[in-house]
Image 1 (cartoon, rainbow, N blue to C red):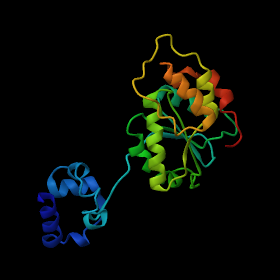
Image 2: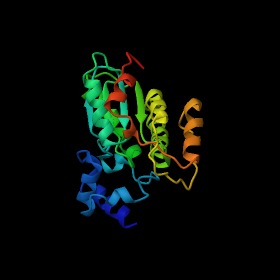
Image 3: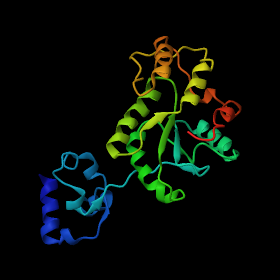
Image 4: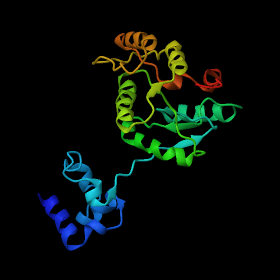
Length: 228
């Protein structure tokens, strides 16, 4: 109620309906002296307050990305070392399959996915047609793209799909000698059947494969594809 009263006062007394549009956190600071006040509440999620009422834009959290070619496709990579290696491989390729390599950054990736909507303007003004992902083969590494795939559907983006060649190669990599114990079943529904079955078996056996198992020498032939 306190939040609604403050917004109402702003609309009535300060001419909020004619205010210049700003970022949502900028509006929250102006109204409450707390830039994250509206992030934490249910009012926006439940539609009681809207960006139109607040004259504010919900700004997507950006992610690091590198242009490596002109293809209308993005490869998201979970970890920083593999991100750097894939960028180096594709930058030296004459006709890379991906136009952009982006750093997914682990947990919270689904919340950053909306930034894709800014990339057609930033990257050669070519609309993005394909979204691919490559991450660790363990429960957290599979949960991240599973959530993000659902978020991509909500945003009306192209489907977020695994890069099959990279995941197949990761399956063939030797797991680390120390077993990785899983207490819960893997989230593998996001994967196509030919990948889901062996990945489910791998995790059920208490094993995992970090994406760093594929170094630059292994990544180079896998990424040597003319098109998706």
